[in-house]
Length: 517
Ligand code: NAD
Image 1 (cartoon, rainbow, N blue to C red):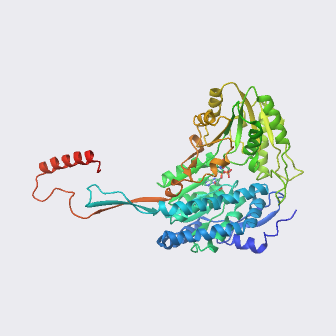
Image 2: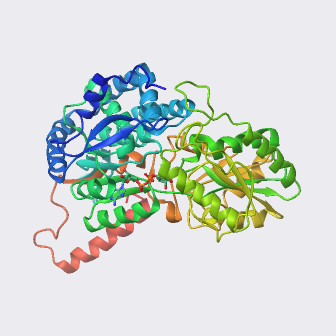
Image 3: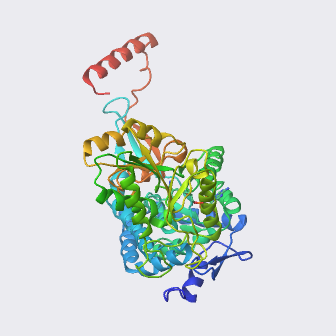
């Protein structure tokens, strides 16, 4: 197998040239399907990160002075370029992550969707809002949205293009600069996105990329940023939140999940089985919002398990740069070993493997079969920790309230799914689930693709959210600009404080009665 024709030496040298690095260490970035080296990715020292922030700050001062409409023009162009060069983006995502082409394609759609949403919303959100001052007519207060400055984005490997760029879009629109630290394994696709942003007219230097291993390259970003957007594991999120707190900067933490699905007794299995297959195995199960636990009413459990296993066995696995395979590789041999250790631990403690449970070295070094378990208990690794692979546990339940309690019996709260024909009943159940996203008759994509609604985790799955109005406003400081047209706010000359206090109380009563303030 060879790399797709679009990944030329010229492209690779252009992309690695965008990394803020003055030379020195490099990281061998490999093609997941073969384990062969694609390129030597430059690594950024602390001094490189310092220089990256300095350059981004300089460019940001100019960018923030542009009228919003002028900034939006860059994103209209960027949107068009993303569609035009879709094939190259998909090739790069596949080469560095090993995911199927179908999934790589779906990932590329996220960025234009986010751009399109905020192209509509940003001009409204960034407009100054007159709020009225404390004394009507003679005072005013205006809410002005100032950019934070330079936003640090720390992104994971599972959706490198989407998490590297989609979160940057509203931050840039709001007038910020960006310093992105992608995962070392998956830096090429976000770097390509950055090159297209420059082609679209972004001022030089505004979007910096620093590369390195997380514990080395991450902290210098947090220590220089005015806000941190982090997507990754709960363990790293805890470290980042703590460090951001110490630096007195805000952060959004999008973390892991152990997401449940409840199949109600009236669910249409012709829809619920393929829906669950997508919800579990998309992106080879490496999706923070994917389903790891399925609760099925006991009366239909056997039938459901039989049909679900049949469908899981039918999934077409493969390493190919075309839309043929339905499921691709895991990200690395290390991660495959971690997923396998969860399955082995479950097996050793008494769980049953209904299908899968083995690696597929015949397809590639990090392939693992779609795996369905029963008899999983909370003392097993996969019973309580995020497995983050193509592994799911089926559980029978007797009553809906039991299913809700089981679904909520986790430290995580990122996503949940309920399947049923009676939409009102399914929605009632959905509202009782402790999760930042809940999908009725869908695994996770419906909530994630709804860009107008905030999407984040509760409990140990995160702090804050992306998307929605606050997905842009969080990258701004609200400045309260108050103007006094006439000096009416103190004690008038010659008046006793006694009289002033009585007049003030009277006006408070009038304002309450009239509703003026
Ligand atoms: P990870 O936490 O190990 O790494 C994520 C990023 O943080 C990488 O860029 C890494 O280099 C960096 N990092 C690691 N240690 C760091 C440190 N000490 N300081 C600063 N940066 C550091 O996560 P991962 O294994 O790469 O990604 C998978 C995880 O991400 C899963 O838990 C998944 O659920 C989660 N995730 C969550 C969402 C969401 O939106 N909630 C989306 C995608 C992935």
